[in-house]
Amino acid sequence: MRLWRLSLFAVALSFLVPGGISAQAQQRGPQVIYAQDELPDGETPGVVPDQQEASTEFQKQVVFFRTNEPPGTLIVHTSERFLYLVLGNNKALRYGVGVGRDGFTWQGLHKITRKQEWPDWRPPPEMIERQPYLPRFMAGGPGNPLGARALYIGNTIYRIHGTNQPHTIGHAVSSGCFRLVNNDVIDLFERVEVGTRVIVRHAPQM
Image 1 (cartoon, rainbow, N blue to C red):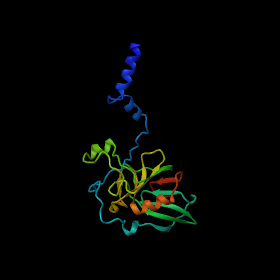
Image 2 (cartoon, rainbow, N blue to C red; image 1 turned 120 degrees about the vertical axis):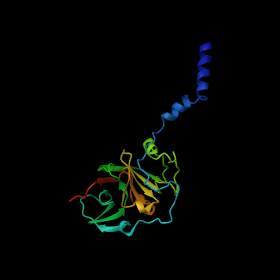
Image 3 (cartoon, rainbow, N blue to C red; image 1 turned 135 degrees about the horizontal axis):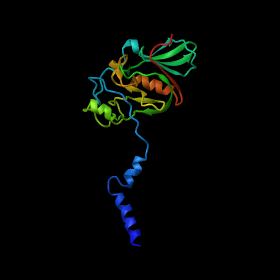
Image 4 (cartoon, one colour; image 1 turned 180 degrees about the vertical axis):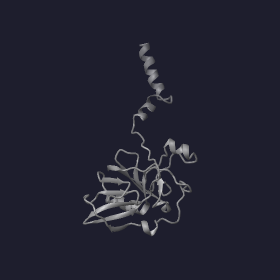
């Protein structure tokens, strides 16, 4: 009887003491996956600039695009700073993007595994170490660096997301993610489904 009472007391105490059963249960929850998207110099979380459009060169448009990939495929040419949504008949919808800076470029074949409207932002420890002034968490919203929408790429830490900093489109600014102005990422979000094929190329295919 005494042993039973001690066990019951220990269980009750664990719900009151930090690190007890409740904390352990939370640790078994979904793992937070950080997007390694660095903030460029001069970009401040929570600040929304007046200008919301990319320069004319990088604005969304239908272009001639020759590929053997089926309609609906996403193709990113990081060296060109463009993302293409294949339409078929040698046509594609082209969006200007910001890409990974030197040392953070990559290429590969993946799929869109998740979509999120107004995603929250949690800078990883490595980013906070480099930029200690950053907040540890920012809820989704107009001032959030991840913008209005996010498309998660495979099981990687990378995603296609929005930004309210149009001057960064067409530049190598991130740690591997691809950013579009908010109006463009909202448009892309509506056109693309989970499971969409994503091809990332560091150089155009000749």
